[in-house]
Amino acid sequence: MKAFPVLLTMLVCCGVLRAEEPVRERIEWIDIWVTDAEKSELPRVLFVGDSITRGYFGGAEKHLAGKAYCARLTTSKCVSDPTFNDDLLLLLKQYKFSVIHFNNGLHGWGYTEEQYESGLAETFRVLKEHAGDTTLIWTTTTPVRESSNLQAFEARTERVKVRNQSAARIMEQHGIAIDDLFELVKDHPEWQSRDGVHFNGSGNEALAKQVADSVLKHLPKP
Image 1 (cartoon, helix red, strand yellow):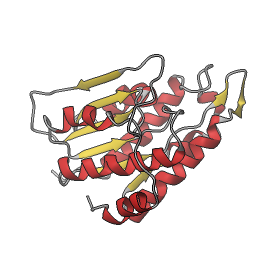
Image 2 (tube, one colour):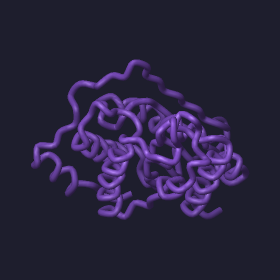
Image 3 (tube, rainbow, N blue to C red):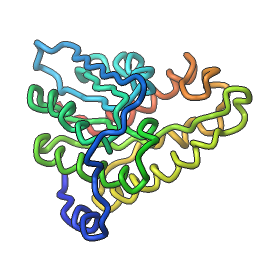
Image 4 (cartoon, one colour):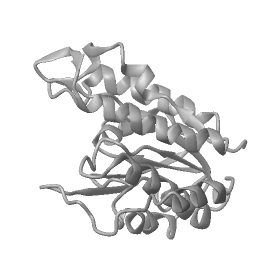
């Protein structure tokens, strides 16, 4: 993983700062799951994300069976939250991961897009410091649809696009692979659940397959 000093310097010099106080949601949650924690024969993969990640995790784990052990850290916290990296460190200090497949973008609407980009840069600094030579894959955030008309995107999708663009600038500048799940699902409203945010069985399977394929490309050779 490459260093991020130029980006971090730009963010500080431009006055874009990480939020000092968290913007709370009505319900906040975190879900940490480590499969085969006692084993060490295969490389270990960490999926970081939210309920979308939790939805496709089981399918991705099945696709990776016999090739990698899988873990997840899914949470309602946004990378802009000043405590987000504390939760991430819970796993990074306990396990060695060969690949981290990372997404964050569907929570934290109370933060500005500048705070989102700054928070993401700070999380990358933490990953560089604590994840060593782990390969990082960034995952684009999926769109939000109108629950009453799944053919139409909800207004928040415009903010999702902005966040994806911010993340792409960081990833492309430093040669980080991007798994474009937004592009995968954008023309498939039939994969969406009725709430317009999550995915049904077909959608989660499509996501799981692409995610697993993305991870397989970056697993260390036996």
